[in-house]
Image 1 (tube, one colour):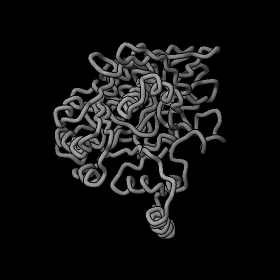
Image 2 (image 1 turned 90 degrees about the horizontal axis):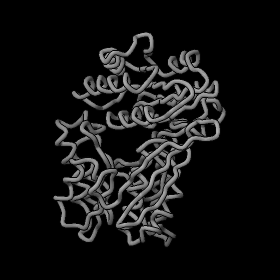
Image 3 (image 1 turned 90 degrees about the vertical axis):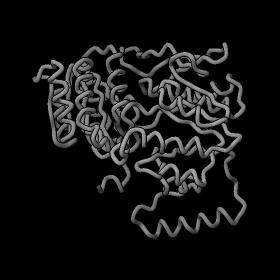
Image 4 (image 1 turned 30 degrees about the vertical axis):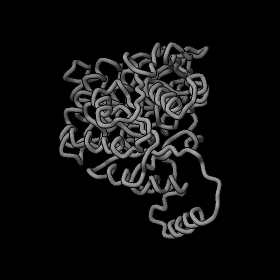
Length: 373
């Protein structure tokens, strides 16, 4: 699924129209279709789920001038948020994010990830009712007892956990993906359901239909009977740390391999963030592969943390990495692949997946616009 979370993308989502990129004919059709939608009576959903993101100061403030959420969800950001490069400080990122809260309807419900102390402080910005979710008490919707589920061949096939609220508990299984990254959308979904007037039972029943998107900790079959954890949609320090934590929690028959690309748009935090990821990699992986100029600092961090240099490979581009790593992979290995969008780490997955003929179905960024970049 593409993320249309910008000042241009949000209106396209509202009108259910595609991004025309550089094609004027598509944009002309969008204008016509948009006018038809406004002028003629059409069936339109009762609820819209919109992602609102920020690359620069003013992005969210601009959107919330006309988007007034009935329910606003603020997810975990971490100590070094994604897209921090074009902000003067982390505090400026938090200020920009706060406009989601400030732009709510007065009758709206605020949903916050209570695992992030900075996010939780947003509660102080509004008198609106608030629901919190997280993995630690106190919180309103609690996720707990997360564990990896294995198939009959002892390969990871998904995760299970339970959701607790107001004395009630529901068991959840997420098929085909791994990590706490899959728990948070479920917890947020249950919280939104409660905020919309659903019962806890109804909300939990609804989220059991949750299907993880491509490139987000998805489990794929790899060559030589290996297993790929495809987390190539995007990257940030907190997301990479969680992905490595998930890799650490798995008990494979083979080795744990991490193939990590650059984390982009981190500005002055880039070098140190990559080194920290390297330090964590040294403690969580048996073999480390880095891709890109910035990721050299991941390798440096791993070496400084005591990882054997013979267990580290460095590449300039994802295609070279994907071709070379085929000679390294062994049966039973579990391979995490992750990087920012611009790192194009899906090209690594394409080289090592067992079913490359299904890449259009399984991988991110398979449309012609991305392929031509």
